[in-house]
Length: 538
Image (cartoon, rainbow, N blue to C red; front, side, top):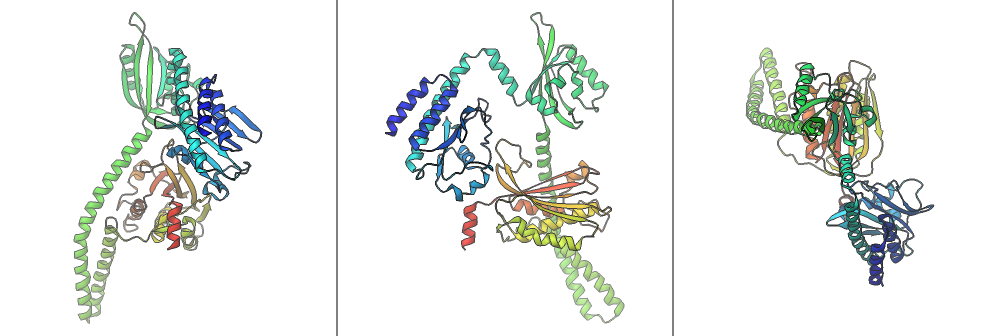
């Protein structure tokens, strides 16, 4: 029966008048065969953006339209979209994905999701729900077959529609959807056109820019000499490329690359210029991060080598001091030997801290709830810090556990807290600790270059202190770097934080401006629920 239905479905699909009706056919036929009561079908558009065409069958909504469904969230449908395989769940009320169903959504007893994939690329998703008696492996197989046939038909129809479009329409769409900023500038430097990417890059709307001089987008650091060089190059009808500091609508600056190419008429006269602008913000962040990693590795390697030699010296100082102390009866001599012994002990402690950066210590990692693990340390901070410093603790959301060594996680919190205390100690300051969920989707930019798409728990510490300039911020995690007076700090706290976080496959970011405080945010990957279960059963 399924084979006959599949053949009829293929014929109906090929005869559909347009893509919208084809989508309705796909959904209705699959619903009819599998027995689901409600559901939806969503396709990406030609650029890969979500919700190009949508069919919704739920409650009072039935038919095609643009509905707000997010295929990159953490729902079960998003997982199917990512892995490209059909999945059904007949006990959805107890599923961990149930928490991601929006409030007010009709009840869901069971679900079946199948990807619509073509040439190894998922271009859509079909979801069905609430089949009486539940879905079966046969339903999953049938839905997968429907999805494969639907994908082939949809791709063919899109190719046919694209071929019918005039060249200028296809070109306009390509320019408007390009990831790089594109624009057209008149021969006298006035903006005539900008695409969405250039607007997003600068913070302006297109109406704000069209008709304005292009130098509006350059920062004040671009002096008159720079303007003159640009003008002379363009007036000569030459192409021009430069890395320049731009100015956004809100006044902030950003680094980007600009390339101007002349647009000439039939006689060769330059009429306009075609602009390509590429935001370098993320490239610069990645470049600085890689430089920081290389610097950290070099400093730690050097420090470790020196520390081994110092360890031998400290051992000799402590050992001989103890022997001399036991043999001496002169009070003055004993006091002097005790000073030498204390200095040797302090030196040995410092060596141990340095070696901890590179020597792999055994970590007692286990699945923990981050908020529970640090609760005791938060109370210690409230008791031990000056009363004029307000300690705030927020748990905004926490959907799972992380795999971590509780002692080291609390060491991270203590080091960050003491660093924050130093920043706010001159005023009646505030230190705020926040735990919350964080999801990094494949389509979004990661806060840190080491982070991969997935689910995380973030731990952030924000203070209202003096803040740091960019130069200090770039060195904050280096061993022995400190802004405090000699003797107040060894400059190892943030270095220790960096290494502990890295050993937990996490990432840490820092954001600060002078006079505006600092925010340190740590991202720990969520541990899989099956790992948590196995740990709990031991």
